[in-house]
Image (cartoon, rainbow, N blue to C red; front, side):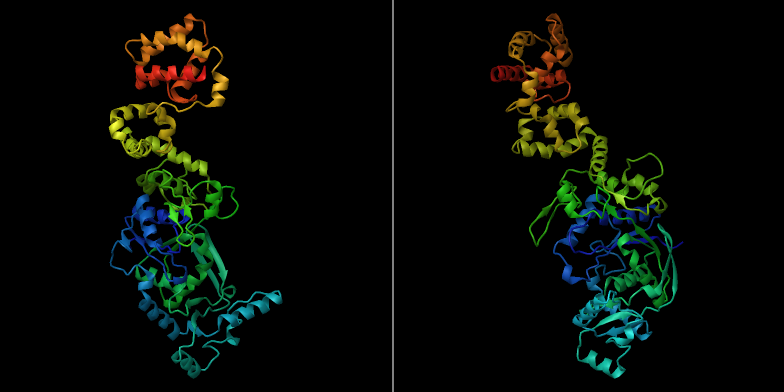
Length: 509
């Protein structure tokens, strides 16, 4: 049986969009499922759009997500180089093969000449295409003499090399996601295969690389679907058997209208990149899932469900479980709407699956930052473990720990005025002053005995529980938040609890 080989081939023109990471993920899952190889290839033939740092960003993002290539750029392998700018001589050999077989030709038309033709056609309400109906009246090796072509090449005239598309053919293509596709070759233009700078276009380079790297399945984004007929014709022109193709659906904006972009992330307050990215051209910084506190396993789970489902109710998967469950037949043809709230839900589920020890590793940096880098000195780890046990169910991100537990580490600096207005009545300070002596006598200072003593006092006074317990919570946290009130008191300790109550009485009387 032929080895299953897939590749992820991004262009280093900027940060890796989550749509690109999803493409990498689907390739990775299939490679693992069939004990195949997942290859990273950098397609950097468009040097004008190359962005410094983008290649390093791609690798770091994949490794953070756990989608680690088996071979490729930066990982080694026997089919390199895995960076297209280092494979120029290879492409020249194959474009020469197409020229010699009459499947490609030189075109000397200048950009200005082609632009003038486009404008002329537009004025006539038509669209210009460099195709079989136009090529024989244009400036190329099909219309020029061989002597003139040779002279121009020797003199270094700027030129490109175009594919000679045979018109009038009915192409029948199968896509593993979209099924049967039928295209007439007369609708195709003569695409450029080699640019004037001597570098190949995506069309030539990816065909040659996929062949030489023994790629068996090409799984890529929907935006490449219009190029599929040309790629099939190129395989045919070389006399090669094409790989299997699968074109993934777009990831759509939260409203379902149009492709998800970085602008949507900025306006919607959610990341569209796996890692934080600072644009070297503008200096603008875009947030990343890692920096926002998402777990890599949650991020992968989010991406997996953008266009795929397992066919049952299960939604929470580990990467290993995704490998076992994933199948291209379950990938949708239509676009997948990105839901920021659903993304948070996935994160919450995965964060809650962590053990206390694992969660602490994410929380400790938050404490170090908030407590001035002296968390270990100020607060014993065992104390934080106890705090975590009280608030962990409320946590979605590591940063949430401080939101829900800051009052365990420092007394509230103020009190929510809206809460105070509603819950701290004219007689509240007087009632709490009466309660303080009762609390001072509670022994042992444990949640159960604290609850029993305070509850008995409230009942003896014929008071409503909310009339006392809510102001106590305000005194301890500054607001109506926090876990079980009596567990909170027990953990804070008698001295600190009474101190905060006295301060609230004095401040809010």
